[in-house]
Length: 196
Image (cartoon, rainbow, N blue to C red; front, side, top):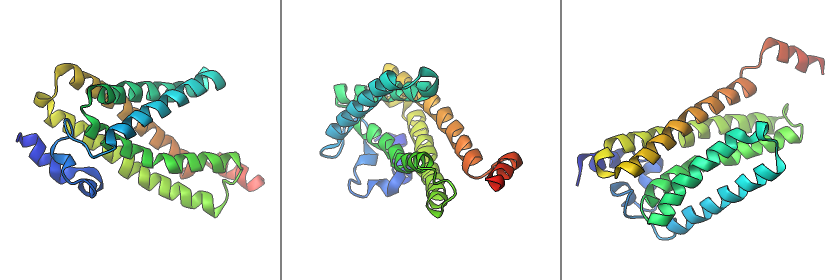
């Protein structure tokens, strides 16, 4: 087995996928039962959400998510069609754990519950899961691609590298926006809150 594979086993997110410890050894050719179906359903979800945003939102409001979904659809689509890299796509799905708290944040904002304990608690959990399941997972995936570049065909490596090059900055920018919005309000915003 190649050096990159052995070294990666020690650094896989979520304690080496406790339910399927063999996954870190081969993210290309093996995957747990049902994983291919999960990735295929995820492609369907992202396609449906993409079409929904195109039909129901202004482009200037949704272009970042449309771009995000396009990248995910292409990358996950390759895994589904080739029946390879399903394990890698499964690692990528760890990012979506944080989406629970991002969506809850949006619901609380729409319900005008910004100044509640529930919103504050969700903000803290959202930030924590963001660091663990988005930033750390994307960093690990980028590292895995780099270490295994000789074991991955050039076209697939290029798609993966471009995907990581797009997703990582997008997630860092979103993290900054969340920090600024939920934790570092400007003095003007604080003053406006006091006047309400």
